[in-house]
Image (cartoon, rainbow, N blue to C red; front, side, top):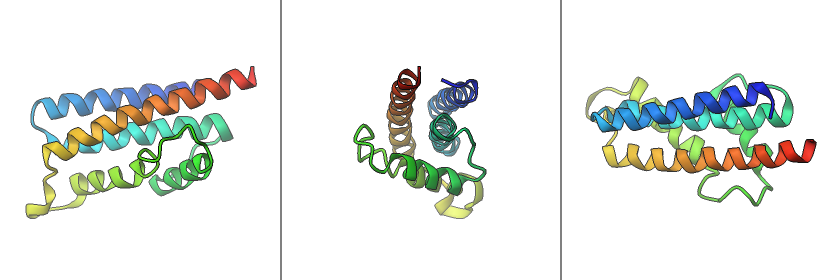
Length: 134
């Protein structure tokens, strides 16, 4: 694994830990945002590992992850839309106001669970690709 990919995975795990802590103290918006960011950084790890480059935008990460993983059977179908679905949580947390600006705790908890699975999947993919390149 490249040092850059390892750094992205470390950041992903930090964001996931923050998401869990946020949810534990009833900061559901922050939990949802951090769940998304955990997946975002994990996807960046895969992108860097496979291409040697980092995507520059949220949309760029989503597009490149989908491109790299589209034919990979090791990525469960429920994980494929995670980045685009979880980005909505980040957008709500960062930009919405009024009654639609609160992410329900159950939704953040579900995002944390999926982010955990997403990171585990990326670790498996990178581990296998690292072994293949050794």
